[in-house]
Amino acid sequence: MYYGFGFFYYDWTLLLLIPGLLLGLVAQSLVRSRFRRYSKIRSYRGLTGAQVAAGILADAGLPEVEIEVVGGRLSDHYDPRTGKLRLSSEVAHSDSVAALGVAAHEVGHAIQHSRGYFPLHLRNAVVPATKIGSWLYLPIFIAGLIFAIEPLVWVGIGCFTLILLFQLVTLPVEFNASSRALAVLKDHGYLEPGELTGARKVLSAAALTYVAALVSSLLILLRLLLIAGKFNRR
Image (cartoon, rainbow, N blue to C red; front, top):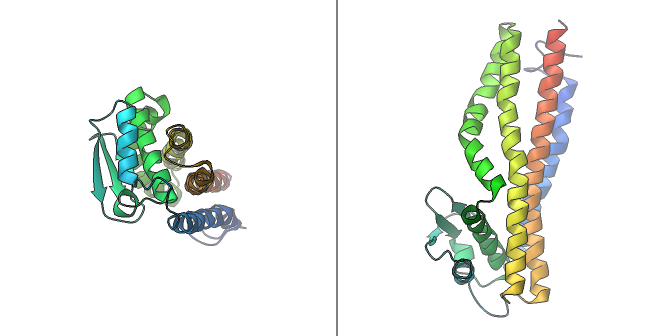
């Protein structure tokens, strides 16, 4: 049963959000625990994340990609706009199994960019629309409910689907970057076979956060559709 518009007050569809929330919390906890665990295990060769990143970039023919050390915990990322690889201090200066896994993963994105990997370029292309959608979907959706303007309700839902599209495209981008990272760490001998298991666990936990975000968004979309359906039957 709905109360009010069914969006502002309690309704049973709120229960749909719980699985996504729980999965997100589990994923974040797993990332932190695995990174903390494998940050304590030094790699056999003793190379730091920054050194491994530079080596992989050189082998891939991308010496022009600049490596920057930035602040923040697990703030590592590749910026396709500037062509810079940004590694957090705990990754760049560490020779741990976790650090090498994360560094190689981010280099994987740089290689994707240079090789014209389509899902990455598609994700970059939808970023502006996704930002607009994330700002506008809720105000438009709520305005449609308040003023009983059905087209606004569906415009709001349409804006939200842009967020869903971004998260859907993100999955192959992240999984592919991790696959590239593990392959190069193995093939170039940066990590021993036993060490690769630790790096794989860290990257798998990170990938789960993207899966959790997608599941959460799917459940939100389902809730919006159910509310819109109830609104249409009023």
